[in-house]
Structure formats: C-alpha cells, structure tokens
Length: 162
Image (cartoon, rainbow, N blue to C red; front, top):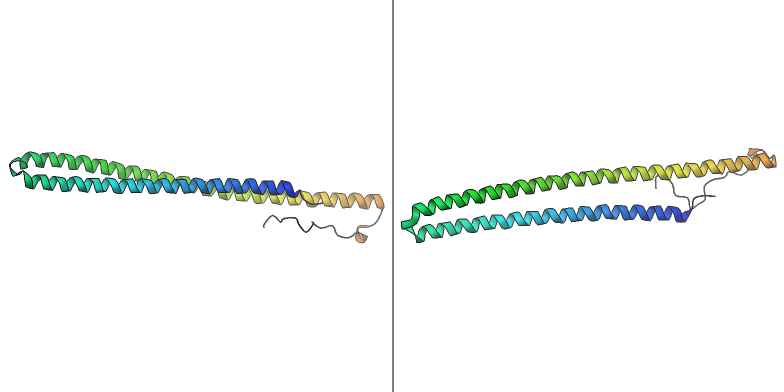
C-alpha cells in the first residue's frame, strides 16, 4: 500500500535536475549580461582615450587645428554613434535576458504547480485504490465497515503540499 518510493524519488531527481538546469541557464545569462556591461565600460574608456588623444593633437599642431577639429568631430560622431549602438544593443540584450528570466520563472512556477498537481493526483489515486481494496475485502468477508480498522496512508507517503 502506498507509492513506489523509487518512482517518486526518480521524479524528484528529475525535477531537481530540471530546476538546476534552469538556475544554471539563469546564471549563464547573468554572466553574459555582466560581460556586456564590462564591454560597454571598455568602449567608454576607449572613447575617453580618443578624446584625450584629440586634445593632445590639437595642442601639438596649432597650424593644423582646423583640419584636426573637423577630423575630431568626425571621430567623436562615429564614437558616439558606436557608443549609442552599443548602449542600445546592451539595453536590448538586457531586456531579452529580463524577458527570458521572466519566462524561466514562469516556467518554473508552472512546473511546480504541475508537480504539485501530479503528486496530489497520485496521492488521490492511492487513496482511491486503498478504498477499493477495503471495499473488496469487506465484500468478501461479509464484515461490516465499522469493524474494519481505518486504512490510512503509510507513514512514508509524501503529501502533495510538502
């Protein structure tokens, strides 16, 4: 009477593995976001280095100031465009990771709900089976149900909420 401990243990191991996979993927996504943030910082530092080089070049070459200024403006616009692109890409990636994290959290919640439902259904099926067995035994022996001891789940049956 009761459930098959090995089957339930196997189901719990599978659930644990799936849960660990979800968390591992989440950690990998978090690491990826961190890498993107670090790359953004490096690009900003590169942009600052280019600006510093521009100032040094202007001081060193007053006779070429006009052409250097035009060139610097072009470099700055390109750097700002690249910076904006990188920022937009980073925000898009962060949003994608946020959506993916939300999706994974929803999947986890759904999985937990389904697991609880499954465990509840298994427990109910065991109880129904025990009641059928008890009824069958009563019918065969002719003994009234009041004289039969109550058949309850074994001590090692896991409840659906636990």
